[in-house]
Structure formats: structure tokens, C-alpha cells
Image (cartoon, rainbow, N blue to C red; front, side, top):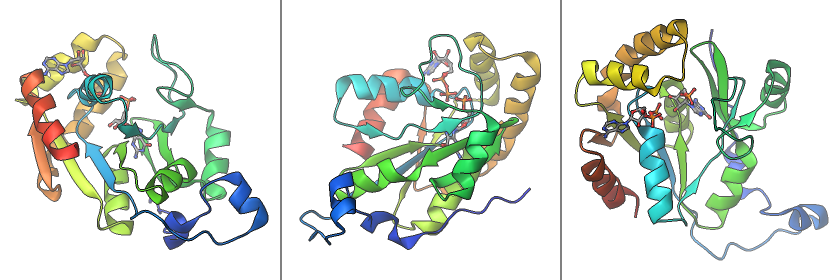
Length: 212
Ligand code: ADP
Ligand code: 5GP
């Protein structure tokens, strides 16, 4: 299956709120455009954990909320962790050009809603996209200035242990994630920066250097 990004170069020049759009007045840009940061790494490597800690320490960091057709895990909230939607709604979003990038991962769709990202970038803010490899490649192609950060595990064995210990996925889903992890790990050198998430505090400190 091929996945086409919707390379809409106007993404960063859309009106930044509904009232501007309604009157159709071109607003002069008062800030330099913000920065898009892609954060990628195999499932279970600790991306979510790292970002949760970073957000707690630096609440101003803006993290894009993705849409997915995956079922919520225990404790996940609609609109906070993800927008949980069915396949029909997701496919409608694709057709209507509402996604900046999207991909199918381990049997479910995942995608980045375009408009909230465009608004933040236009305001001069940094936006972090925590996405898998196919989406990261789409973003890299359409937005070559995006900073690409890869999160790697200390070893494949530790990655498997973390996925299993998380205890949130069924065996079949774990196997799909582990198979995909091999492909993702092999692509680490496509990224600008690699952070190894071995000691959590050290990884957080390295990410702070990159993001702040
Ligand atoms: P991802 O978002 O990349 O899929 P998670 O953040 O859900 O990964 O982390 C997967 C599991 O690994 C969780 O149980 C988490 O507590 C654990 N974990 C994350 N970072 C570390 C670390 N540096 N050392 C040990 N365990 C970790
Ligand atoms: P999980 O189901 O573990 O939350 O996420 C599975 C994978 O989907 C992770 O690698 C995560 O980074 C990725 N992902 C989450 N949101 C998006 C998205 O909007 N687009 C893409 N391409 N991948 C995403």
C-alpha cells in the first residue's frame, strides 16, 4: 500500500484562526515561522514516557495530538492522548486533506491533523510530532527543514522487554510491533539526531538540549 502525503505548500500560510478565515483578510506575518520536530523510534522505546516527563517540566512544549483507529489503552483519553476515531472517519479525513501525514502501523491508521500544526507554526511555535517512520519520511519530504530526532533503545532485547512489560498489547500486536521495530531501527541514520533511551534522566537531558 502506498501512502501519499498531501503536500500542500500552503499549510503554513493558512489563516491562524476562524475569524481571519471568515473575513478573508490576509494577515501580515509578525513572527518567524515555528519549527517542526519529528520524534520517531520503535514502539516501546519510551517516546511517550520521555514526552510526558518533558511536558511536565516544560508545559509550553507543544505536542501534536494524532488521530488513530487503534482502541484506547487503559487510562488514555480522547483528545488528549489521541483522537480515537473509526476507519470510516479516518478515511474521510484523508480524502478531505485534513492530515499533514498519515500511515498504517500494526493494523491501525495514525495521522497528524494538519490545521492545529499549521496554526502553531504560523504563530512561531515549535511543534513536536511523535510519529512512526513512514510518517516521518513523508514529513521530511514535504518539510525539509523539519528537525528529525530518533529515539533508540539500548538493545533489541531491552526494547522487547519494555514492550512486553508495558502489558498493554496482545501477543499478535506485540509481534507486529517487534517486526516493525527492526525496520525502524535500521533507518536511524536518516535522522538528524539520535538519543538512546537507556537511563531515562540522561535521555530527558539530551532531549532538552535538542528541543529547548
Ligand atoms: P513508546 O511511547 O515509545 O511506545 P512507552 O513510553 O509506552 O513507549 O514506554 C514503553 C515502556 O518502557 C513503558 O513501560 C515505560 O515505562 C518503559 N520505559 C520508558 N523509558 C524507559 C527507560 N529509560 N528505562 C526503562 N524503562 C523505560
Ligand atoms: P501506539 O499505538 O503505540 O500509541 O503508536 C504506534 C506508533 O504510531 C508509534 O510509533 C507512534 O509514534 C506512531 N504514531 C502516533 N501518532 C502518529 C501519527 O499521527 N502519524 C504517524 N505516522 N504515526 C503515529
